[in-house]
Amino acid sequence: MASVIQMFRLAQASACLALLPAAPVQSACTDDAMIVFDGSGSMAEMGFNMIDEPRIFEAQRALRDVMPRVAPHRKIGLIVYGPKLEGAPQACAGVDLRFGPRPDATVPVLEAIDALEPEGNTALTEAVAMAAKVLNFRDKPGTIVLVTDGKETCGGAPCALARQLFAEGEALTVHVIGYKVRSEHFHWPGERSEGEETTVSAAQCLATQTGGEYVSAETVDDLVQAMNRMLGCNVLF
Image 1: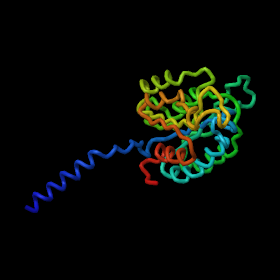
Image 2 (image 1 turned 90 degrees about the vertical axis):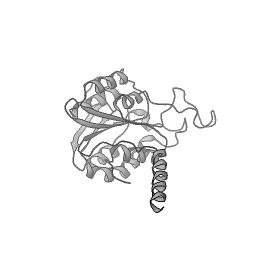
Image 3 (image 1 turned 120 degrees about the vertical axis):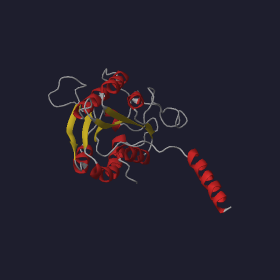
Image 4 (image 1 turned 30 degrees about the vertical axis):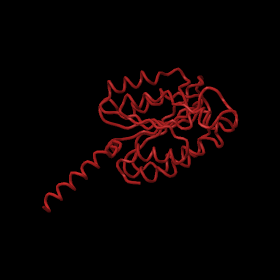
C-alpha cells in the first residue's frame, strides 16, 4: 500500500511540474557577449510621454547593479551608438566600438556609460551588425543585448539584418530591451491615460528571428531583471 501511495504522490508532483512555465533559455557562459547601447539624443529626453527622468540616468543605475553580477562570469564588450564620432561628416556616423569582449568588464562598461552624453540619431541596425562581426558570428556562438528606446532612424533595416544573422550565423542570439519606447506622437502629462503612448521597438524582430527575448521595460527594476536574465549565464540573482 505504501508503494501505491508513493507512486500516486509522484504522479501528482509530475503533473504539477508539467504546469509550471518553462524557464527562459540562457546562453552558456562560454559564449562571448556584446552590449549594444543606445546613446542617441532621445535617451536624454524628459517632460512628456510619461518620461519624468532622462532614460540615460535610469540605464546607468541599472548597469551599476547588473555589471558586477554578470561580468565575472563571461566576456562582455560594448558598442555605443548615437553621438557622432569626431570628424565624421554624417549625422548617423555614431556607431562606436568601445571594446570587444573582455573578462570582468564591469569597470570599462560603467566608465563608458557614466560618461555618455546622449545625442545624435539611432543607427541601431549598423550597431548590431558591428556587434555580430566583433563576435565572429559566422563561426561561433555569441550573444548580443541591444538596449534601445525607439526605432531605427538612420535608414537601416533591422528585420533584414535579423534574417541575415539567422541564416548565416553559427548560433547568434540577439536579445532586445525596448526601454520606455514611445509612439510617434508626444503627449504632455494628462493628455492621455498612462500607458497608451507606449509601443514596441521596430528592433523586436532581431530577437524573434534569432531566438532571443524581447522585453518592454518601463522601470529600472525592469531593466535590471532583463539584463540579469540575458547576460547572467544561469547565475541566480
